[in-house]
Amino acid sequence: MQYKVFEEMKLLRVARVPRRYAREVRWLPQIGDVVPDFKAETTAGPLSFHDWAGGSWVYLFSHPAAFTPVCSTEMVSLAKSVTDFQGRNVKLLGVCSSPLEEQRQWHSDMARSLGADISFPMIADTQRILSDLFGMLHREESGECTVRKSLLIGPDRRIRVISETPILVGRNTEEILRQIDAVQTVDAYNVGVPADWRKGEPCLLLPGAYGEPRFDFWRSMRMVRSYLTYVGNPWQIAFGANERKQAA
Ligand code: BEZ
Image (cartoon, rainbow, N blue to C red; front, top):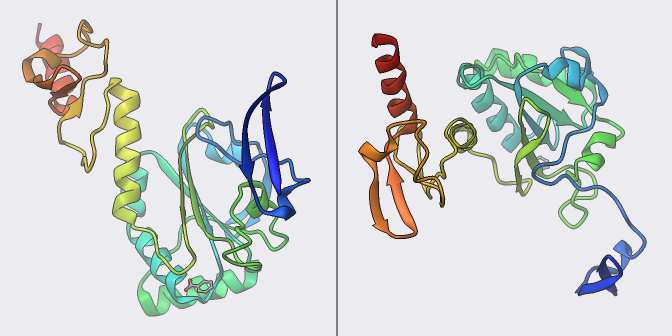
């Protein structure tokens, strides 16, 4: 089966796709898209997404099923890191196709036996409407369950990070927090974030940003190549700059 991709009536490319996609045209979330509003039943009561999110960031993640091993370890890990998310102004919201009552029983059991206090809402998406909307159902992986898909959504409701992991591979909460730090650093200081970066480490000066007077980047600049210049930890540099401004 061939699927033709056109732009302004000009044939761009021909991609081979599975036969069943021949008649499907649907939205698949992409970085930069605004997340549509929706209402849902959750373990913390009914929720209207835009109102609930308010001015916060949101980490929206799918969870294949209640009372399953990999999911249990992820829930414990997220529950233990709730304050780390709160400290970054990020609200957690899960999408799980298991019914509400089953999820509540699972959470109670994990609270008793694993010490995990699941304080964030989990949607009961029993009809898989949201799972489908957000492209969380990958039919070659499972006809029943979602894969482990996560969206980091900014306060302006735009998607900033999308990640997908197979059902049997649990996500890494430290990596999720690292990505949040990275995106928030990019937003705050208009810098690039290098590979394997962790908060507090040097960032990258963007092409054309040499003349920017906002922070004392020039003090910490380390030019490696004409196209690769590191700057010190912008959070620290900016803090120093603010302190100096207040002292003056
Ligand atoms: C798990 O979380 O371990 C799991 C979830 C769905 C199907 C199989 C395993």
